[in-house]
Length: 337
Image (cartoon, rainbow, N blue to C red):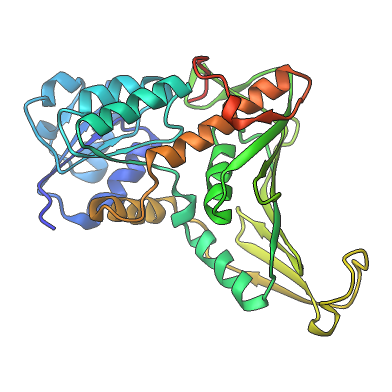
């Protein structure tokens, strides 16, 4: 594939990771736009991007056409940025969450369809080393039917980080979340991406059509860790995302057919230290799939994750009432980044 030019719009922490991720693709030219000149200085001094490829305004690059555009700005301006970039490329990667409302998501989807743009949304968990390792462990230990996924973490933000696990759950199970119940803490939490952004802390429980459940518990009073517990018919897999420590416990084969209420039968237990998640590597794999137009996260998949977030907020407002995802509020805007 002959790749000529790439544009990165937004050079914060994710924009910088994307720059590292695309180095292997050997673009002839990489342009970067960021209103913060100090961030452009980082691109020049640390990554040797020539100053004539660095811009503070999108208007300065509008005469160019790019093989790939990466929108790495905050979610509140994704729609605005996508409108601008839709005339510059037929291949766009946009950061998650896709937008701050379902209405904006649908507008982005419509623009992409009308202009025949291939769009990937950067939910990169499914491309991470962690996910591939988990799949191998499940197969090796014959954990059988998947029951639920519990995500227990520090104050990581249900929108900022929880949305990764919502999308991963949908992909892992092959079934969209159908219902959600949520109890959020009263006070919104600060988001490191800017003073105007707010996120949620609390406890979200979701269920798909297969009756498999996702639980995300992220409290503002808990300040350490991000752990996943995959529960199966025949055992449990514990994953420590920060250290790479994994623990799997599975019933011994001769006890497999015993009733589920006999939960303490002899087991086979294993501890392992696996490769930590490398966000740059997973982003690179996702971009590679996008350029091949195969196996990337499409807009409808990203929208399903947004629906869960929107329905979670509505559930909380209604005393944690179980909300059907299809009834999620279309117009309301949120303050996540």
